[in-house]
Image (tube, rainbow, N blue to C red; front, side, top):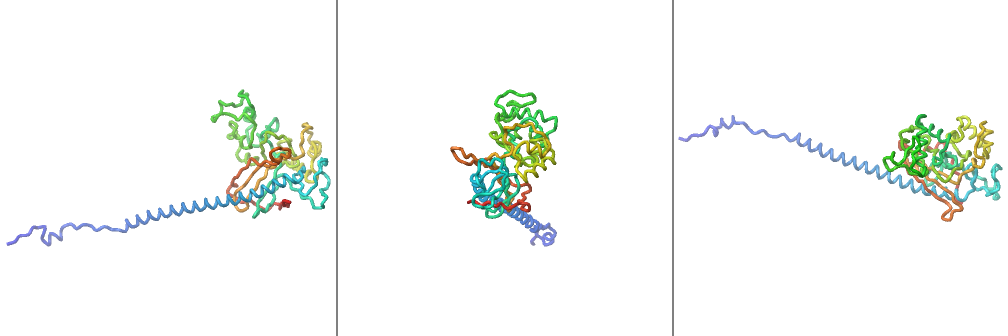
Length: 358
């Protein structure tokens, strides 16, 4: 007689616990999700690289056009006669015509084109439109030459509180002088974390922010408004009221807005030639240096080119040195920046530049 164990009986096999079969869908979904995320990251990275490559191409294309424009403008500055307002294209050279008030004319009978170096907007075509601004440096506030009331008015214009202005003036003097003697409320080497002041005059307008406490003392919006009107040249002290904007006229001569605008209207009819002209227009008597030139360009021009296809902006300084032994023209202080909010240049109020190299 055969016997069987309980485990081998059919009833026992039916009643024994069966292994649970797995369900594959959650695992498949998890793997699919991970793969999808990997692809999304890769696509995002590729899109970012594509955008960076496009921005780099736009930057290179703009630089090529800006260099061509710079070369043409440098040639114009070096070959066309300088006038109180800027450049007289096709005008005759007459060094004895000090006032330059006569009707523009030349021997060839070609109309004289006035190119103003007062930061007005021009439209220049260099493989596409560029917005150009030319600014005579003598029509800007020279931050390398800040003195007295002009310095105080400048500090007020950039938002420095009244209680901070005298300390900032003292720190400015300590920054540009050659000694290590601290002025009252000033700052010398021991007060700076990065090695102290430059002990020389400023060579760029933005260097003013390197003075101890300057960056914290200014109002950011006021500084940005004033920045286009600022220059830095330790070798030049000339002033040109025929190319200065209203903010600079207010700082240099203590004028109010209506007086500055009156000067701008007056010079549009006839270039101003002396402090007497300025006094007659504004009604303000000036105790200035009558040996200083107040009404003629400095031979240094700031050019700014804004792209109409991208947000890039190029800025450079052209300096004429006709008696120099090395070269007749210098180009320095170049800057390449992007416009705020990556905005392209607006051409609605720009006048077409009527200059072509000859």
